[in-house]
Image (cartoon, rainbow, N blue to C red; front, side):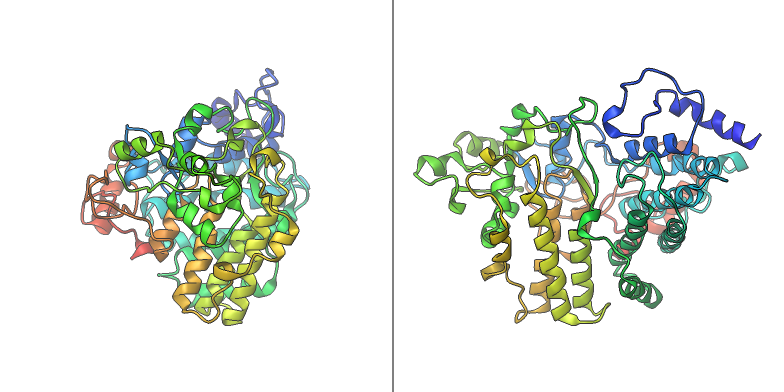
Length: 512
């Protein structure tokens, strides 16, 4: 009877899901499934979680604005470029998926894949909650997904408790994957429980570092314990969604030339890459036309000029018309199976560990931090060197090769062992920020709020933040439907955290 109940709960959301387990096969089989399997649920959950929210070039470009990687060069100002949003609210959608996650684990009971699906269910529950607690503050967690038990108005748990339970769930997920077998329906790691186990460990490091302002001694000790155990991501373990040539699974920026020609690379990105003589510049950008007209070549670092993120839309559009800015590289629009969408890479793990070494969370100090810093940079440069979508004709004669990687750490790119700790942290976090270039991720903005690196410019004259034009927004508001579906718990959370005002400039617990 319980299995029938789960099927009834899920049939509406699954009626359009076919029985394939590969991303490039979505919507190719018109048959409606008559049974629900854990593999089908895994595929649907991953598709919902990792596909870009609205896969078209316009919205994808908007999704890259908050982390200051690109700039829109049109007269109509985009709120995301100026510290606001078309819809300044968070989303509890991840909590609504807990029913499906529980069902996925339930349907796997008695199968050889049972432990894998239990681990997967906990991983998604934890990471969905992590994104929500970082974005909004206190959230329902302990009572979420329990509508079938009569809990339709879950209480909001304190952020400290949510972080602690997330870490506990990821630890349990890692233990489940340690007993797990290869499973189907996995878009990300091909059902390999070994890689999922490593990811669960790496994610715990990311979460503890994100809450570094509030991390307890026990949590820092847990961080060091995970690192010492050594079961972490390798270069072969990038957690990524690979786009394909299927029209339903293409890179969102494919065929986006009309948007590309009004999309500039930010001066923050261009200047950081030029300072390091980093050839990713030639993968990310086109030369500024006025520099070419002046006689510079496309392989010259000086031919590239970034657009300021903080000046008015009118001024940006005027300068763009004069050819003053480097636009986003053409290659992003040319291939359906473009760059994978990166969610957690070995490189990011290295930068997390480098910061931890500088902060004394793990042994080795600056020497260990240098090793992790260099390993992280080498890995992402190697990634671009081998990227199938990096078409040689669009790399401006400056392709990354192994000799370039081997000689990268000179001049400004060399780890600042003799500089200050602040100098080194800025290097580490700037390199981590560059990982997110054109990945439509706003997590780099959260890292900036936590660390101050790299420094995002804020111009009160152009800021669209309605709660204060000289303040960086620190959170999104709670979903609007909470005011009608769970008003008492919503108001209690807002009163206890933010003095009764659900505002975007108020710091959630992890930033205080």
